Length: 169
View (cartoon, rainbow, N blue to C red):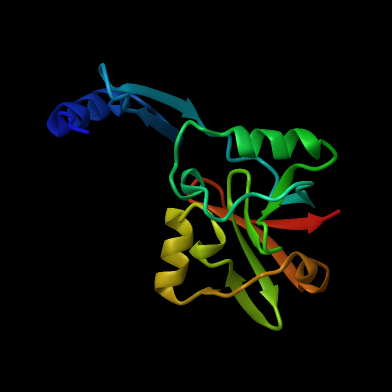
């Protein structure tokens, strides 16, 4: 759909001009109406180590909404609700492939290599994940649910928090 790109850029500039510290900025652009911009301070003192559990039910690798950052977060919210015993959940698809966590991409050390699931598994192509791939720090490979128990390490990565070590329950 059409939107006023210059107007959105000006609204973003105005929204962040007086912010101090680290913030995440969310831009919502409805088909009708003006853009909505929300800024929230980020507490970078969050733990560098988190616990994760496997989600109870699979996601569908063909779900287009998993590939885009949208306000449709039901899949993630449901998975988190089903596993309240952990800080986060590892999502997996109908083929048994790990996809991502609720707000981070997944990187595992498997057979001595740092690997992240391929986009074809059905996941958000995070910006930090893309940077790590571009730099050659990680590579794409299939990561199966059954592989989690034999991973030498599990990491949750995103552009806000960087690398966080995860322990699977």
